[in-house]
Amino acid sequence: MSSGSSFGSSQWTQRSRSAEDDVDLDLQAEMEKRRKRRKESNRESARRSRLRKQQHHDDLTSQVDQLKGQNKQLNMALSTTSQNLVAVQAQNSVLQTQRMELASRLGALTEILWCISSSTGTAAPTNPAMADGITTTWSWSDASGDILGASAWNQQQQPIDAYRC
Image 1 (tube, rainbow, N blue to C red):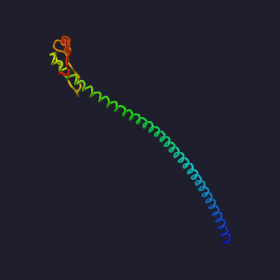
Image 2 (image 1 turned 90 degrees about the vertical axis):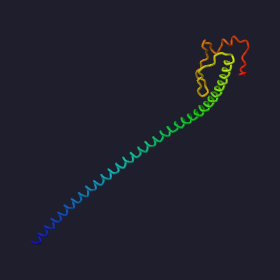
Image 3 (image 1 turned 30 degrees about the vertical axis):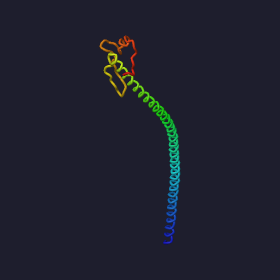
Image 4 (image 1 turned 90 degrees about the horizontal axis):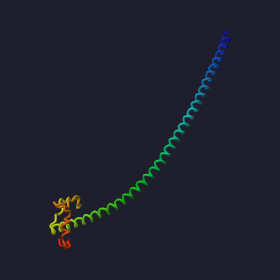
């Protein structure tokens, strides 16, 4: 009996081991499938990551090219503006020199007119508003409306000596 029961128990043990081995094999096969799926998923994820990285790199390269173009345009505009500034400054300098010369001439002519009007007895210019040496408002008539004393000039036979003033 004991031999029969030990034989039966050894069969059960073998079957049990065989079933355990089958479960182990199934478990290992399932784990292998999972590992392969994980590897494939990781490969796909890495591929997508590389594509995103490449797309980002391409976008940045495009942006660099665009910014270089804008920089070139701005440098050209700056150069043109700088040249215009130099030209305007030169023109401004010429105009300021002309203004000073004209203001000097106007001052000399005003003195001559004051001398003429004082020597002929005609009305002198009234209300000379001077701003930076430039006359802005003049009233050259006397009470009778004689502009610049023209009637007195027409009555005189001799020319007026402006240097005498």
